[in-house]
Amino acid sequence: MKRITRTFGLALGAVVSLSALAACGSDDAASTVADDCEPIAKVETVKDGTLTAAIANFPPYIGAKDGQPTGIDGELLKKVAADLCLELKAQSTSFPGVVSALDTGKADLSAGSWTVNDERRAKYELSDPVYLSLMSVGSKDGWDTIEQLEGKKVGTTTGYLFTGEAQKALGADNVKLYQSEQAVYDDLKAGRIDAGLFTEGALAGYLTADGNPAKIKNEVMQETPKIAMTTGTDATVVMIRKGATDLRDAVNQVLAEYQSSGELAKNLEKAGISEQSAING
Image (cartoon, rainbow, N blue to C red; front, top):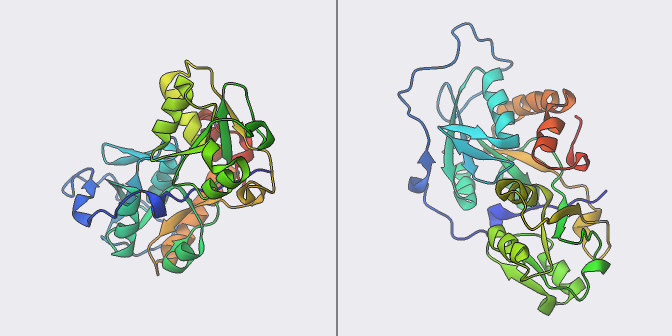
């Protein structure tokens, strides 16, 4: 199976100050938690009665609207809050802003295609795997192997772990680096590059958003020793502030149900993401 990770928490610009966090919703809003709600576990949060989630917009995985998270991971966060009888407060920020919020205890957790590395293992409590984030090739020809990309004009962003390996495999002059996935997609759609390297879900989001007028195909990259991440088993996780092991355990309990019920797989499919990325719990 072909698998890849994403490192946006480490590679998307300067860290923003916590004052830049956009807290959606009001602290004074009436509680939506029923008086007779029975939580599945007792957990400590940064604010009593509230589950604070720091969110960086990354559809179709995560987003925020009217103070509530949206997307595949957003549904998981809503389930966690409901099962713990907590109000859910979404703070919209950047990827570096999420890291800062967790590091300084301003947020309880974050979700949205976060993958695991040694630094995150040391700094946070990490949930069980949520889903796989697969490497994808976007092209009008449906290419899905490294060999098919040889000699082609390929684009990708600086924020992916596989960038250096792709340049080595295909030649640095043939792999153009961009600061955003949107820019890669725009050049692919316009025919200025022959192929783009994305995560499968990210490309699916772009294709859905504009109706795919260029008829671009979204194909998971086949396994190749030239790009180590295509042979791995890395998966996304919920990142939880350090020391909150009670919250981590509760998240895992809710996650297991989200997966085993088939709801996660359905939400992935609805977003245009292949069943290869689903974890059944």
